[in-house]
Image 1 (cartoon, rainbow, N blue to C red):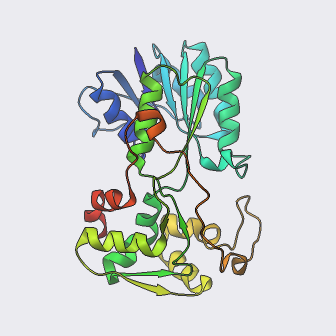
Image 2 (image 1 turned 90 degrees about the horizontal axis):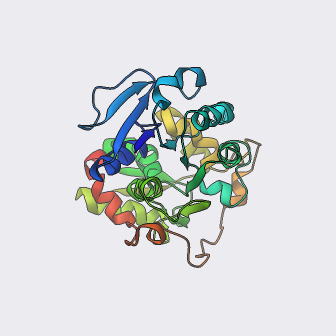
Length: 287
């Protein structure tokens, strides 16, 4: 059995590679420009999901695929995979599909996979714990401070290793066909508590400055990268579909636990990793 991992250099894909190799699977990693940092035993192939005609060699002899979402070409990619003999596709999707917010990005990829006739499983992570590294990392490293409009807002951040573990199990195991796994962290954690966990992990105090959304937005835009690209949505200036919104509508929202939420334990049988564990795993990234 040969498995193709797309998005193999991403935060989840690279962990899926490791999990598959550790299980003894024959693994092929897709990248647009080639890689020289692949785990031992992984075959690297060049191709681009945005250009399906480049995938011929990558799909040759492949039985199963871990599919990174590129909605514009999903139908063509999936059809080429099916024609090449792929029998199972595991998609990296989003919890926003589960709650109905995502209708034009991850959902079309899921629909293309389901229509293909292959075995399918969707992995739908909620809020990535990694978001906090991309948002808060620069100010923590430079100033040991986080500027946050709603420090008591809370949710269940999920560790990227739990996401990868579920994807790996769905690729290798049985009983996952036709399932969509929404994944969260195991604990409701406020942003203030998240900062405290990071401070504990790095062994130094980190201050929380409560600021207006527009001030936080200025800092995120100045950071560039993920923070700048997502500032308007994360701070309430933009809704999920990209429409204009009012951040004041988020003020005072009571972060009440909605009850039990699904985690990776349903699939792996192991407790999902906590935010504190995630912070310890990434302590060096915040120092």
